[in-house]
Each structure stands twice: as structure tokens, then as C-alpha cells.
Image 1 (tube, rainbow, N blue to C red):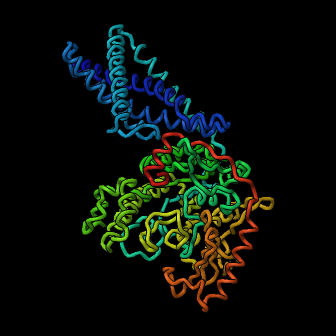
Image 2 (image 1 turned 180 degrees about the vertical axis):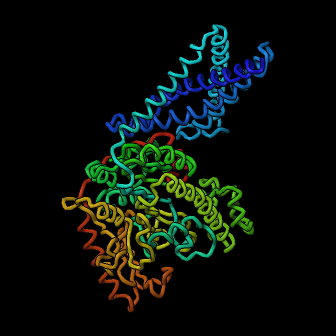
Length: 608
């Protein structure tokens, strides 16, 4: 009798496993057909990657749902079949299967936050799906035992197992190369990050332990600069190794008399980083939280997968780490663009408490979190700002860096777990910095002072082949030539304005030959040796600074007798450069922004 009872329990367990396999197969196919990653790779003919996505989906769902329904099968064997117990089993089944579904769906970039209004609706749909699965399971369970035949138990289990084995076999068959033979390229761009707020650049506060540890395994370029102080032109320069005047993505956003907002477009005549690497056999994917860089603005050129609608570091990490397992078997290029350090400065309370002392009465964390309102308030009271007000704003900024640093630690850890960390050329860069009243204002995009031009430039080579600090000045348009030289990509017929930094790393090129130029609309700057000149074309006015004695750019030598020789020489060189790069290609027509993007850009202060 006891043996018969045990057999019944094992049979119940088998029914649960069987139903879990079958439902996992059906749901994974549903997710597969509705997932934009799958369509992106099948459309471009990269069936090996597509098969691995399906494998990842099937295995994750099969693992979670088999466990859920196996538990439900055991519970079914322990209770009687009357109506009250049936209701309890339905509730248990719904809870288990819904938990498994939410665990899986939460990794998908399009799934909303659980506590948001859309999230509650999605959770309700998942719950109803779980209830339906549980009801089908109980009906399936009764039918399988009422027949007295084991076939009703075996058939779905065999079908489910065959499907799992078929998908896994197909994925393995489609693998074209081994990861060990590949060198991947990963760019992590942290929007609005100043280099002087990182420990690896001498900052004293503990804002960046993970980044500092990463920097110790790589090469830190101490003097690194962006080509602009606004995201759109700066990123276009990073992608093309051209100056803003050349690619003509200059203005960012503008509006017409009717109130419609328009964006500059990166013309498809320019060859981008992703296009260079895709042509060289790299599988390219972009993961961004940046409304300035949507695909319809031209920034997705060359990417097989490009998602610029992610929210915060958590979604970027989830989307990238969902993408990574199915792509690590072949060389890839991944671009991760984080907006978490960008204004509004609204770190989580845990990180805020690490840095903010609460001494300021003008900078209230809750007010700063609404950047539009805070900027209006700031414009009215900035002349009355006290040192403690600026310190509190900086503290919120530091807290955001520290919070993002923990998310980057997760990326570094998972890259190691997946076995690609030491096979990857990894860059940490930024598009621009942020100002904190060094020259009478906050934010970025309106000046060319160093607080908004100095950005991190850290490179970790595969297997940490090179480490140390390089003092030679570099710039963000140097990233693309560096990658292409390292990857052995021929660039003879293409225009690249930057230069590879590999010679600075191995000592074969001790000094930089060319000046560093930056621009923002009517402002131009040249940096050469110890001197920097900023020139305003509209006002026909210049600012000259001796950076060796005045790194804060406070003493303008432009009109001083001691600076006339340097001012004249640098101004002529700046004018010659501006003429040489002007109008290489015409500006692309603007594209109208969608309402969602307009609202996001308003919240960030890009549109008022």
C-alpha cells in the first residue's frame, strides 16, 4: 500500500514536470516571436545568434516552470480533490507560475517597473496567465489519471524534452567560432561624468571603487578631452572620429513656430564605429538611456540590435546581460550608454546618505530631482549661492556616481562569469562633464571650460596586457582609430580625425603632435602645450589661459601683453583648423521628435 502511495506521488511529480516542459515550450515560442532581439537577428540573417536567443529563452523558462509545476504536482498528491482544495491548488499554481513568469519577464527591456501603472497591468496579465496554466494543469492531471494509461503522462514530457533538446542542438550546431579566438570591444559611456570626480583621477571621496579597481587593471589617460560639451555632437564625434563641424550634428534640438521639436540627424553618409566593426565581422549592439541618440536620429547605423529607450542602469544591465550569453560565442561590439550621473541629481537615499550632509537650504534633494523647476529656481538665486549650496549639489552628483559604480561592478562581474572579460578591449569614457559654478553656472552645453571638457578615458586591454598612467593628452575622437588599429581594420580610404593612442601606451609615440580642438556652436577651443584658447565667433572675443599656472581658467591673458604672442599664434592655428574642417558634408535635415522623447529631454533640461 505504501509502495503504491509512493508511486502515486512520483507520478504526480512526473505530471508536473511534464506540464512544465510543455508549457515552457509554448511560452518560449510566444516570447520568441514577440521579442525584437529575435527579429533583429533573423532579419539580418544572423541565424546563429537567433538560435542562441531561442535557446536562452527555452532553457530559462523550462528550468523555472518545471520546478513550479513539479512543486504543484507534489502538492496535488498531498491533498484531496474536493472543491476547497482545488481552489487552493489553483491559487498555489497561479502564484508559482506567475513568480516564474515575472522572474523571466523582468529581464526584458520592454517590461515596465512592477509598481508603475503599466507594471500593475502587466502583472495582472501574468497572474491571469498563471491562473489559466494552473487550471489547465489540474484538468490535464485529472485526465492523465482518469484514463489509467501512462501515455497521457509520457507524451507531453517527451514532446517537451524533444523541443528543449532540439533547440539546444540547433544552437550548438549554429555556433561558428570559439570565444577564445575572439577579441571583443566594449565601450561604457557614462553621460556627464567628470574625470576629476573619480578616485583613479585623484578624487579623495569614495565615489568609484569599482571603476578604480578596473582602472588599476588598465591604462588611465590623465588628460583626456571631449570634442563638445553636448551629448549629440559629442557622441557623433565618438562614433565617427570627426569634429562636429564635419558631421554637422551641431545644434541638438530646436523647435519651430508651431511648437514642434526637431533633432539633428547623423547622416548615413558617415561611416560609424558600429559600421566599421560590423564590416570586420563583429556583432554590434547598443544599449542606451539617452533620448538624444535614438535610431531615427541616425545613431543606430551599423548596429544589429540598438535600444535607446532603456531606463536607468538597471534596465541597461538587464538588457545587456540578457543579450550577452547568446552572443559571447562570436566577437562582438557592445556600446553601453548610462545616463544615471546626468542631471537631475536624484540618487537613491542609501547613496545620498553617504555624501549629503544637509547643510544647504537652497539645494533640497527633492527639488533637485525635478530639474526643470530647480533650474528656474537656480537662475533666480544663483548670485546668492553659498559654498555649502554648491557643496550639496556636488554631493548629490557624487552620490549618483557611487550608485552607478555598483551597477558597473555587476557588469564587470558578469563579464568575468561569462568568460569574456579577459577577451575584451574595454573603454570607459564620457561625452562631457558638468559644471558647478566654476564659471558662474551649472550644467553643461554652453561653455568650453575644462570642467565640461575633461572626461575619463580608461582602457583595459585583453588579459590586462597594459597598465599604468599616460599623461599625453588624448580626446574622444581617438577611441575609434585606437579600436580599428587594435583590431587590424584597414582605414586607408576613410577619413578619421583622431589618432590611435596605442603608441602612447607602448611608448613608441611619446608625444602628441597635433593640438586638441573642441567646439560648441559659436565657441571654438584649441589646447596646445600649456596654453588653451577659447574663441567666441559671435562676439569675436577670445580667452587665453596658461594651464600650468592657472588650471582653473580664471585669469584671461588674451588682452594682456604677456599673452599676446601665444594668443595670436593659437588664434591663427584655430582659424586655419576651423576653415579646413568646415562643411566637409552638408548638414542632414532635421527629424521631428516624438512626444515621449520631447518629454524626456525636457525633464533632463535639454528642452525648455
